[in-house]
Amino acid sequence: MNKKPKLSLMIHTASFDTFLQTQGITSYFTSLCQNICQQTLKEIELVYVDTFYDHNKNNFESVYKNLPFVVKHVPIHKNHRYYFDKDYAFISAAKNTGILYADGELLVTCDDAEFFPDHLFSLYYSYFTSGTYMIAMHNRMKSIITKDGVPTFPINGDIYVNDHRFKAFKEKSLIHKNGTWTYAGTSFSLEDALTMNGFNEKMDGCKSLEDCEFGSRLQMLGRSFISDKEGIVYIVDHPSYSSYVVRNSDTGEDGQIPDLSFYLPTNKNINNLIAIENYGVCQCTTYFQEITANKNAITEKQLKVIQKETIKYRGFDPLADDNKEKMDIWLNAPNFDLASERKELRNSTEWRW
Image (cartoon, rainbow, N blue to C red; front, side, top):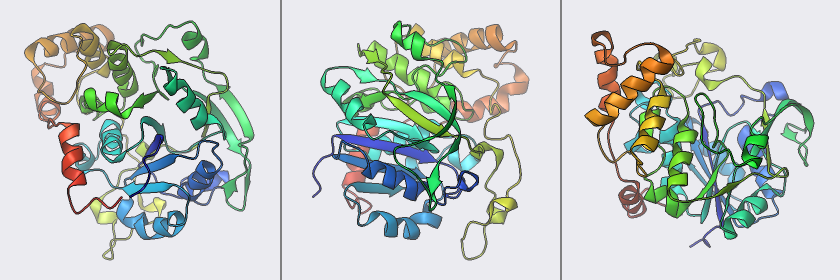
């Protein structure tokens, strides 16, 4: 039995492990594990939610089996594949999969292509023990210095965009605005994640504002947030996974994933699945003070708010007859209870940690 970690780093990826080759990084997973080894906080686990789990599992095991921290390399959980199986964005579902597997007191969810200064997770945990959730700022890197296929440590390179949110957080202007990603980089406790029943999967289908909606519910729980000029995440420029779609016909008979060149460009993953602006879903959350998500079907009252906000900000009616087919896909997304799913998972033969 492994000692319970203080912090669970949850990373979800829908990209090939080699997607940073143009940046001189041979394997993102290997580089990430080396980055975590540099952290001053040692009681960490990595929950790596991988679209290409079956393709990567054997190679990845050779990387992490001798590491000084636990790695839970997992696929999208079977209960959270609704949008995944339809080839649409599934970011909230991936994060909820991470919550099912995580055991840390504090959870931090990050995108792939991100790297961390060696003090970052100590800083996250220090604020957590003082009763505050730190929101990391993002520095975007045009290029990153590497050696032998991995980043050099400490992280260095060509930083060309500093996070625009720092001033807003410093002034405590935390309420999200239309089109912003106010709570991206938020840390939160496992307890709070289960109380709120995870990230709202109604935000999936098109990629928009899921962090804001989750952060709004954390605020409703009375949680306080802080930014720190030392709390920086570096995100390396890379092609978006949503530029490609995985098609069954592209997978060889041996089940191996082909080269990226076999994948056709598409906008399916980020264009609207439904004629709904997710800002309307965010507004429902705050309007009705809904701390929990994913447990119940959308109500008529919520639909009226979503309709109003979509017409206001997008100029069309999501409830019009010509949107019905797509609306039905969205409205039929399954409901679930993460706490119950965690218990079931940990009592199953799948659990090995």
